[in-house]
Length: 298
Image 1: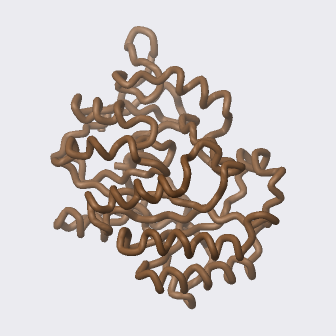
Image 2: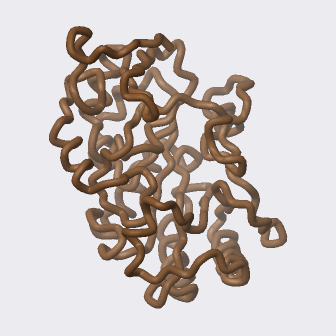
Image 3: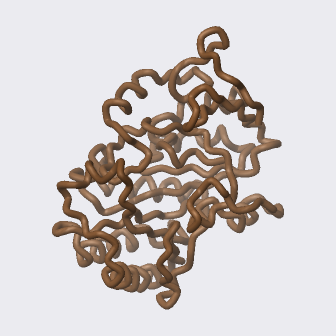
């Protein structure tokens, strides 16, 4: 189960998530068809593992004891950008402290550091990234075993938000240069380093291709064999195994300019106003009389 590529559930919707755990199920709208709803069981007997994606899971940490029947790990994004790009995140020192606390509770292997996406412009130069990555790596040494990097993808929905940033586009030489330097820093700090959904071959620097939803890590956490095929709904370069995502697009208030999951700030604001922590849906209410939706059990 993925919670979630589409939004930051630990940061903004942890109350809702734990209510769903208590109820034992969640409703998930098909992002391509609003009238299709999946009822997804949250029974610990059926959920092999939960993968949380977050930039700031601080709100969830005090309640992790409620997940003692589940296997789970975190994909924790910790970048070097300032508030001109990551507009609604707390100070980096606070985020690093949260990362360390989470690692102390779960173990370093269950908190994967993500430094992505990497964008290059006049302010955020290669040297900037190298220096900041080194600082963060030093702070997280021993608190994670792996760091995953990726380079910025230019989606139509993010081009407008980043137009004033004058971001360098897909320069192979720059990507190789920064990858080589980050790899050296990662190894010095005892991190494995890999890339998320990248075509570029960086194996000469010891950088492999990532599985963010990782059958090998899940085997390690659960102590059980996992036989799940690659997720066909993701990009061809993505190595993740198949999962069910329980999030929704246009619901993350972090406001990061590079975000592919938010298409409109006004829609995000509207959706967050329509969030009810007691609803089976992340956004809005469900009623058979008013929604006219078809429910598929999963």
